[in-house]
Image 1 (cartoon, rainbow, N blue to C red):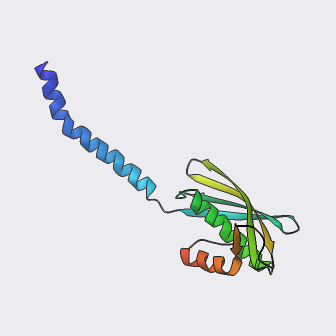
Image 2 (cartoon, rainbow, N blue to C red):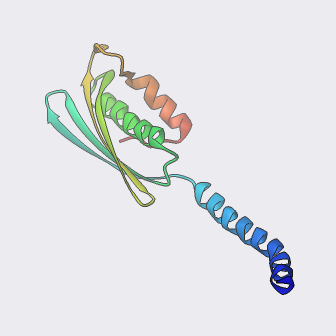
Image 3 (cartoon, rainbow, N blue to C red):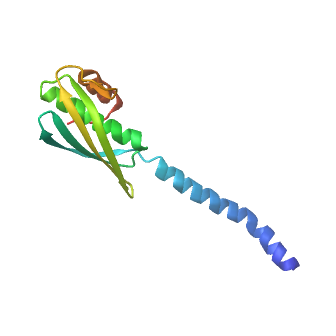
Length: 134
């Protein structure tokens, strides 16, 4: 009994070090910078456009949806439109890769709805934040 307790007391500091090592590893993985893996654009019909984006080490769904919004804003400008409106976004996660499948409408005038994007302002903001566009 004394021997078991002596061993447990001797190993206690080592188990703490092991926990720190595991925690450091998790911290390193969480601290990996996001990688933008590309944008796929499909014109669905008229002013309805589908954007598929992928990221490695996304810091959450917000980062992924921002990437899709940046793509939509740039696409609107390329097509000569000033605005976009978010319709829907589906998100999937596979390991360290996150994908968003987003649909937006593009228009020359401010569309109805609450999820509208001023394309010029959004593209400028995306550039300042380092988020790629189409």
